Length: 335
Image (tube, rainbow, N blue to C red):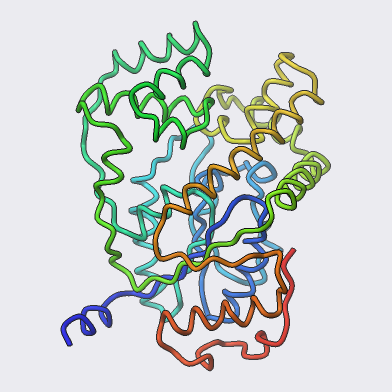
């Protein structure tokens, strides 16, 4: 009885995760309309203004009237952390629920999303500016791969999770080990795994070769839409090429081209390779999460759609009549 009462007090939270280019965006719009939801972006790069093409940010005109939260809330010069996301996402969940809507997190940044789903408590390990400067100099003198290898020696888990170009987070992981003697991986594994929410997490997957083909098509489309020009505008306005925002996929590679470090063809090939690797890391992260109901996007979509609605209805213990668009069960399309 007490357990049921506690569950009743929890806010409902719908979550959709999966690797880049798997089809989250279109499905999220359809589900949001059907379940009277507002979407919270679970993407660490879409928080930045003027970074639209490289982050695959859905234009306002294409959001079909669905309210989206935590998009365009920071300038590219500003830093943004998982703790910032956790706090702001929690506030958005409370606000959406209070207005009688269903909070719906959609994205692919695993740590950000998991920190909200399970109420991670981040240790205050302090800071050592001198240590950070030392690591930065080491990276400048020996290269990003060398710094990444240094992390792999003391914290293999974080090294597997972080891209070698993500120097800010690599240095932070090294700093945590330096200050506490404990790895960031150990701190994450120690987190409690009981959710403060009534959770329904959907995970999207598909055949790897099909996913990789979709990734390459998406990157080609980004280039056609003006990715190079977007990066050039950011540099012209004074955004530092080695700043946090510019370390995102699609930005650091084009910066290399614009600085004359490589040809455009080489930059694009590097971007495609790194994005494929990123998608693999995303899947590895989500595979370790519990409570995810996996949906193979390569299977019959009509059957998948009915299954998805059944999963949501079962998790939230509601009838399918809860949806605001019952006819949605009879069709749909994922792009």
